[in-house]
Figure 1 (cartoon, rainbow, N blue to C red):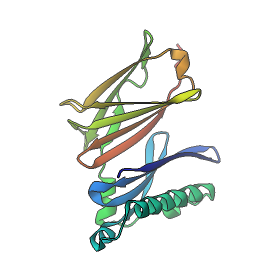
Figure 2 (figure 1 turned 45 degrees about the vertical axis):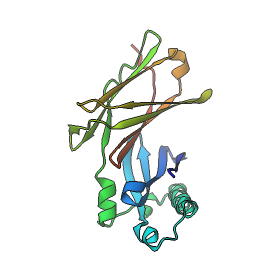
Figure 3 (figure 1 turned 60 degrees about the vertical axis):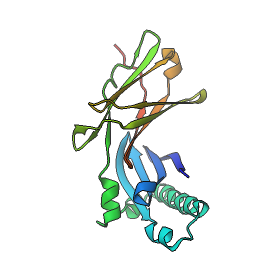
Figure 4 (figure 1 turned 90 degrees about the vertical axis):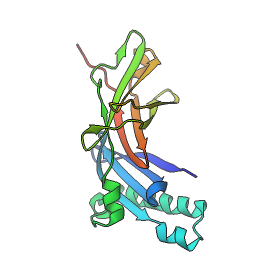
Length: 196
């Protein structure tokens, strides 16, 4: 069972995006914190020992992840975020750091002729990652979120086209998650109109 939590939370003048997910391939429950689309820190709980003991249900896993997500949200509210980030160099935390990266190739020009065109590139150590599955969530203030998926080509690139009026994009955000062989990366982008 795959599950996760996403929360936007503001503290002082900073908007944080907190994402928690079960990383099944690494047997890791991971919470990442993003500011303006960049990951600023992580907290991870390994659960391989619990799986080995044979008594760690999906419900228990979800509860541990939910508690970890809440711990990070509370730390943001209290201004103590740095205290909950992982600083130890364990195999689990190092595995969580070795991530993919997502680049929005045409971020400065995405809307043309009633089309929202998004071109992304997934990389690992600077090289394009072929076959990475991209899941995109377009969140708009006055409409239900819209989801779409694509798979990257040999250069690690993928393009998505949506028929959409430019006025409907005001105040919207795009959450992009890349997944390839158990490795993930998530970026969040805020759409803004560029004045000519």
